[in-house]
Length: 194
Length: 195
Image (cartoon, rainbow over all chains, first blue to last red; front, top):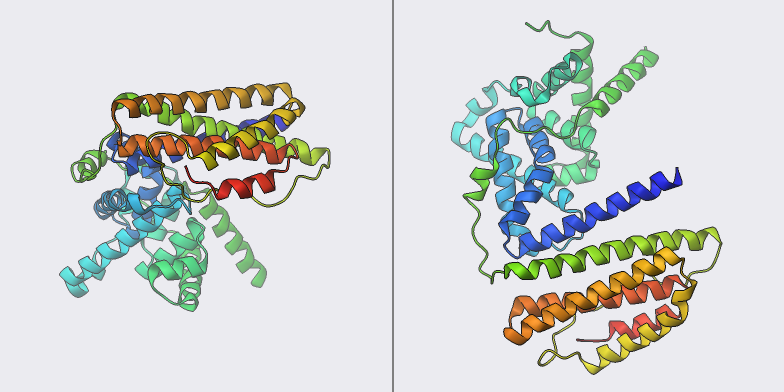
């Protein structure tokens, strides 16, 4: 047991040292190091973007934008937080910026688009319960969905999520409550899938 | 009713907890990203230098691990380890030429002397690891110094050398503290040093 603990501690230390080295190399302009960071983090970043936008093409755009922005900002990254945490914040900003841009371009029509493309993403898998839940999350109103994804799924505090989304903490809490309520209702009475 | 609502909330939390956090995109997004990466307006590293830099990072990583294991052993035998947080060094500047600043060298010698008396108290494996790590760090410093002889004033080499020296100091100071040495005072001296 103790050996297992020491083993996992060693593994964590090794990964942390490896990531620090990759970040330092990427800061100096080594794109191969940044490519490795991309491979290590793309799943979580894309997952976050896909769930926040509920649209595969938009999520892909946001993921690319997040990594490009990270590359530009990397020289200023001081390592006060983990690289992954820093990258997630950039991804959230990319999603929000993309949403604003879309809203400006399409006006009111933007909100009328059919979301829930998460369901159509083959990478989500084919587990029925998982698909039902992903679909239900994808169909939540955007505000409630974003709060649920950040707080309920990715573990951000209300304060952190509110700051990232530019809303009041009270609004964040009520959006989460609303999201949970809607999800609960939809999962208790699921639609029949074709 | 309330009980049912609680059960429903619990089920939802469990379901959310089971969702995978990562989802791989259906297509490779890297080529699109790579095409838009602007090159840094800085110097590029010589390929053969990266092994030296990587050695420094790996050595520091394994030294920190050794230090953590030592800390655990210390706690088990309920020994007091001097408090004062981790070893930190103020931002150093690179001295003239490629020689060490005398203040740095003096503190380095002081730490090494202090360590020599305590290293025998380390478990054999930790001792072997420490000696190996220090040898690696010094080898890396020597390689970078040799490269600086060929390319004096190269800012990347200077940065690598600076990192290697700081890493060596950090390893010496942390081991010294963890084995019950007067690390706090030594570290205080070290924080004032500049390369």
